[in-house]
Image (cartoon, rainbow, N blue to C red; front, side):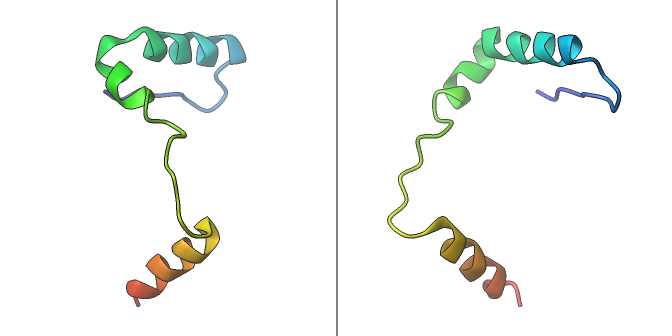
Length: 55
């Protein structure tokens, strides 16, 4: 599912779209995973490592 938020949209419209996504049954499986990643090392170090792999 894709949600388009155009530049200049009011805060009310954006919040309506967010609430719609929260209520959508297809997204329930994914949204329950948000913020649940457990990292064993520093996220910044991981990001730098992953960027270096592309060089």
